[in-house]
Length: 436
Ligand code: AMX
Image (cartoon, rainbow, N blue to C red):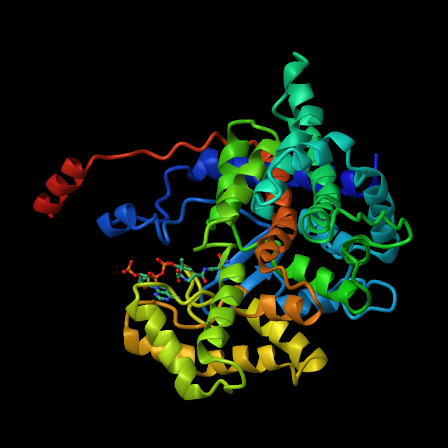
């Protein structure tokens, strides 16, 4: 057994009594109440999910395992010659909550080389799709195709299924999925946009660097990949991709079924597709502006109002939980300030950052007028030549796998139940409304 799995076994065993005690001794303690507007309005803010992988504070933003983004980057061992930690170090941290040693990271890096070998049938399944299918369809199909080799599913069908040990099989699938999703994404990139000229895995590289290599990028894109995957990994459990993955896995569907479903939710324009929408919005804006016309505060403000007056949302702004600038936005902005301070697209995005919150406040609808993760992420990709912006959500999907997979391993470890909230009818709501 790997050191990581050994450590996780110990952690899960130590943790279980906490969950058991809460249910047995304090099961009826009230932690929230539900109002009609929450019921109709997307269950916003209702406390009904449990996760220890990350927590999202509306003012402060995300903490992974109790650490802010800068603290996480600071604490984890870095990739050789790099400013950023390896994805493997972060995976170990998300799963266990402990900062891994370099030796522990090296073990995961080596393990991922084996786990990351993608069976040919995955590529066949993707190639069978029309080439103009959205890359998120390709990613979702690629992940779903892996299902036939699910260890969890085999264990379930073995007749020896056991609620206490099934997490170990979920862990195997989750680790394989994480190791394979980046090479699958790289395959999609080369297949769809680069004439299917594939680049072989380089076994000397870590996860992020190998992804950069396989899509045909050089340094410092390895750091872009590491940063991007880590920043997009997890945002507690209520967002569409994480919640869908958790929900599907709660029916004891395996990791492949669950994450393929999660990716389908990530592909929505109000969620992960927003990073593609931001670039689309900017390009449309520049086209309308015309050749050689400089963006100014005035014409950016007008473009924002045009979007709002047309009944559309400003992509990359607003959030269901956050009420401040997303620290994932800030982290990417800091990267831009260091590596591409004079890039025209970065300057335009910075100008949008200056005016959009004011416009959205004046518009008066969005509860959060500040930028989210997606407002900034396309700029970096564009700068380094990854300009096929319908691919950006795929990058998000690779990163999000880390959080979703860590979560469903723990879900099975702690024996969470099948999710099944209760529905009511509109007539019931009307009756309760009248009764006050
Ligand atoms: N532009 C224009 N209007 C916005 C807005 C924006 N960026 N954000 C919210 N609003 C509007 C809503 O559409 C809603 O209008 P309605 O009352 O007519 O339906 C109203 O403001 C209240 O919405 P809210 O409570 O502030 O937001 P929410 O929790 O319902 O939705 C989100 C959150 C992210 C879907 C929304 O802010 C949005 O559509 N943003 C733009 C798309 C985007 O950037 N998505 C990515 C989010 C991060 C991620 O998941 N990757």
